Amino acid sequence: MVEIKRLDEQAIEDLALGATVLGTGGGGDPYIGKLMALSALQEGHEITLLDPKEIPDDALVIPSAGMGAPTVIVEKIPRGTEVMNAFKVLSDYLGMDVYATLPIEAGGLNSTIPLAVGAKAGIPIVDADGMGRAFPELQMTTFHLYGVPATPMALADERDNVVLLRAANNYWAEWLARTITIKFGGTAWIALYAMTGKQLKEAAIPGTLSLAQKLGEAIRESKESKEDPIDAILEVSGGFRIFTGKIIDVSRRTTGGFARGEAVFEGLDEHKGHTLKIQFQNENLVAILDGEIVASVPDLITVLDMTTGRPITTESLRYGYRGVVIGIPCSEKWRTPKGLEVAGPRYFGYDIDYIPIEKRMEGRE
Image 1 (cartoon, rainbow, N blue to C red):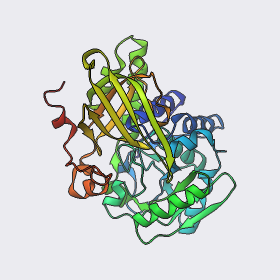
Image 2 (cartoon, rainbow, N blue to C red):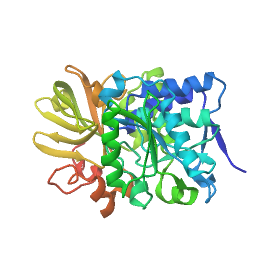
Image 3 (tube, rainbow, N blue to C red):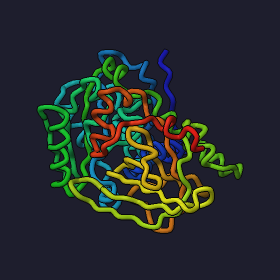
Image 4 (cartoon, one colour):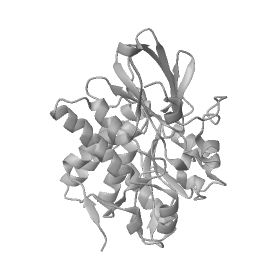
């Protein structure tokens, strides 16, 4: 018997919050996607989660997402029909019934967009994703690591433009889709990485949405019980405290379809007298403590509000914010030679070898 988990409004609130922790500063503002999912519930649709093991091997599964610089998405609010247009165009092109959808990444917006798509399309959402976190480029997925092509993919905007794209490989898919996204005005709503249930079970990172929901619950319940939300997040995620400080400088620019920049933290409490820099490309890439890298992609680096534990996305970083920077171990799929080639520190231009966060933190906590 297939076990289906139905999400109510509280579950969606928790999931959106927890997904932003996993989003490493990116993945889009959770508020927009959360509203779309809640609206679907209010319209009478059901939002259901399905374990990847329950997907038939021959079923068609299509992920759905938003693409572009998070700084643009905040100002360019979608109508809500864009992603459904992309999803329909791709499914019509493939000529098959779609069994389920899922996120390509864990992030506030991109974890919740598929909830709305699944609800409105009348299909379940798979409790899995293709990153276990958020990354800035389309080929940075475990689907890519396992040979699933990103195209054919569909991209839509708020003017009812829809582009159906077929690329030579997944790197070309990123370059071409990024160009289209820029022409759309900096954001696009996409359906891509169509795959079978068999491919999904091999390539996806299972349990991502359930983990996001548990993280959101932990933040909410710690507030209700007046306990430390940071401790609760670290317990659920298996993460580490890296730094406590106040933001004293932020530089951010939108270029090439990405939000790139750096945030500088002045140490507080046990880190008084020290400085931490976080460099980001949509998502946080490296954390540099007094000139030494202490965490890097593909591990997760997340900034949490020091009091509430709520995650602070890269587009929301501001002077004066007091935060705790944490690191969370990534999926083992990213720690393979292929995974590090696709999304390790050297891909982003850092001349360092990847060292797992748990090894970097030995003796520091």
